[in-house]
Image 1 (cartoon, rainbow, N blue to C red):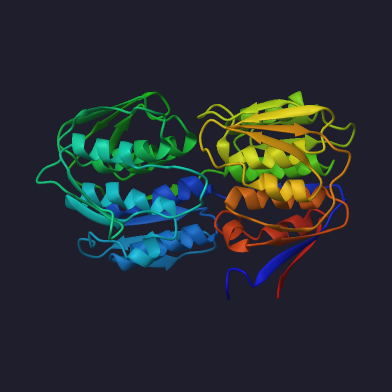
Image 2: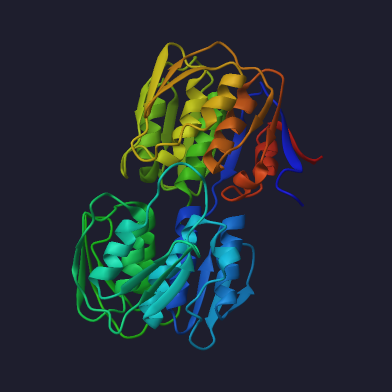
Length: 425
């Protein structure tokens, strides 16, 4: 089935109501799957989201020599056969950006790797220079084949080193951990990313026998070990999926309870909704959004590395703020092309002005459904939220973007009282 043959038809205007269980985290799952390449035993990953990015990473693992058995929905067991292949299949690696994690895991396991330059969403420059800087620091030779679209790494011996990242980067922090956990000596990562996904990967590596200390702080120490074995690990809840549903509930003036969440991972999102006048309450593993009572007011949103407001929830906030009273401003500090949703939102009647890395939003009373096109994963989520809150019928195209990060989205929204259907044209 082609990527352009399907659409979601949304009849907006209904308040969201109900309870939803949040799936395992996409951004953790793809990194955990790459880390599997380091094991010499058998690994069971539980609570993986059933999305196309996870399927692609699992396909890569099988292609390089791991046996997969599915032990239930979202529960994948991978067993090492012999040493894996050091080269990932180009056609799989190019489908998604997270395939670059195999650079670090295969380098750590084999002392070499060859991975196609990554694909994924076109949201601006996402260079791998900090990844390559880390690999060079621990002893790898880097060959960039720009014409062939591949990066090759090789090391006679990996040795611990101190690496200072020039920017906060989740990808490079995780990739450096993957490569260094089997290097000789101690590797120190300074200015490391603090995202929950980094902590999750460190915990997984430690469960396999690695010695990673300090994940969740700006300084991570990795004490190299010779072998990594098997373990069982459960993927953490997806804070981005949870935040998407929170924004959808707020945009539709609904009441929604989210279970299987870690509320502190969503503190920045809850705070911004609170500033806008939306009531958010929480317990140990649940959150409740109540947006029935009042029209939200305009606010300022600035994307920042964790624990700040996440860039992956910026387009969803834009959709929510289109109908807020007064003016809002969004400042995007992570990616320069993350305002792709604005074109579709304007077509629906939003008043948005883009100036560099700032989006200025003048709240309108209503949006009107029309044909809109997802240009990336989170843009698709933004336009879906807008369609749910709009008058009339919205047709959302380019669903392959949404399928990369959201599992059974139409079915789950239907259970919450939303009127939408996925159709093949």
